[in-house]
Length: 419
Image 1 (spheres, rainbow, N blue to C red):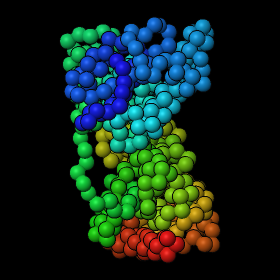
Image 2: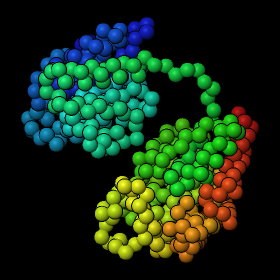
Image 3: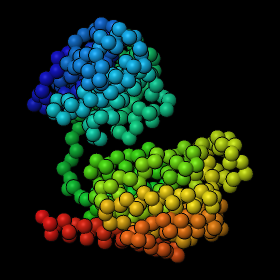
């Protein structure tokens, strides 16, 4: 299983596996890769046993990349420490290989430990690099493994413990998938400036209209569903320099972070655009709601609160006056760090579809607590625009898009003057 540079039409596909326990499976994938005219590059992440087959990146090298020595890991027989070292090392090894242009795609196989290690290697690679992970845990909660990267997980059906009529079919399908991804090239297209937008079901009309306006003006718009991982993905892409402007209409993930909902994006939400200095329009979209799963999952401390069953798996809880006051303070603290153009838009007739006159979450006092604390805490240089409209009204959507467009044009003109 020797690696090598890509041939004329071929690609180099990294195979991540613990060769002491998954050597036969790795060899099976390697044979399929080579039959299709491509090269393989095997990364051994096993620790305890002797590898079944050769590796291009040995387990000793992976351990060293993870800050440990393989012999020491074997002597201590501390599985937790070994896992940590190999997980770190796999990510470092994969990143180095990609930076050296030695891999074009990656496939991994494993049980729970192998999945964690393989996923770590894949998360170290940019979005767009083909990534397929065959795993015994792929039918459960995959968020800890996928994170914010485009990893395709394939459930192994049976344990990855030898070749049989089930495992060979699953492994062959996975190998075919990563080969197909690696062989597929994007059609030529004109690159346009990129805008990231945040959306929820309760802000869809606003974001859809704003997106149409921005696209008509020549921008490409990426819309992120504000479900925690959506916000994290958006933040990561902004931090990585992909994004030129932000239409952050739906900051609801902060309500989940504050109240323990299931769609939190963590405490760094709203940091990336501020630090990048790119133009942003920010609105308090859907801060009237916290997301839980089925009604019985709502914590008992929230007994008596206003709930709305959005669907069988999503229960919304109305945020109260105190929570909205704190949410305003949090947003202001984040936005005060903005290094670039910023406009904050406040929809005085509600921050979601449900928060509009006559609807279930309409509560003007709670909204005013949010708007008031936000305005009091924002720095004097931050422009705040109040609109007597619901967030989904045409007036609000059009104003949000036009304000962002204006800032983008000014930014572009300044950049042209400096060049």
